[in-house]
Image (cartoon, rainbow, N blue to C red; front, side):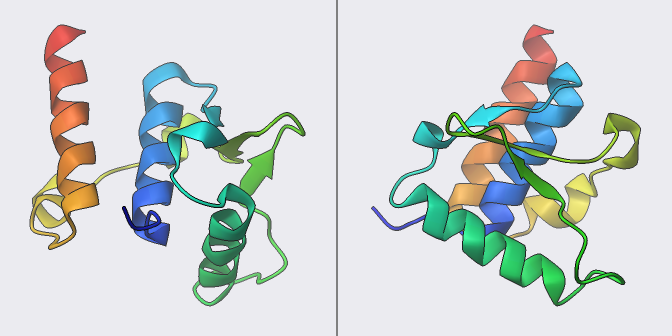
Length: 103
């Protein structure tokens, strides 16, 4: 099993934040070396953020992570996300759709 992509991690964090308003996801949900994966996410974000010093991924010190954003700042372009080639993304979209139907 390969490590989750930065996009898969960000999507998972965004879905959690959107779903419960708090957004904490335990690192155990991400396969592989979580700290290294989060480091890659932060590095990737710095390349696209207007303020490269901004920290959008927060750690609670107990192994959980979340997006440091208000939930209403998180939106999804489901049409584009569904077209993504990565199977990790496809599974997250299916999971989100299942949760939406259940809720």
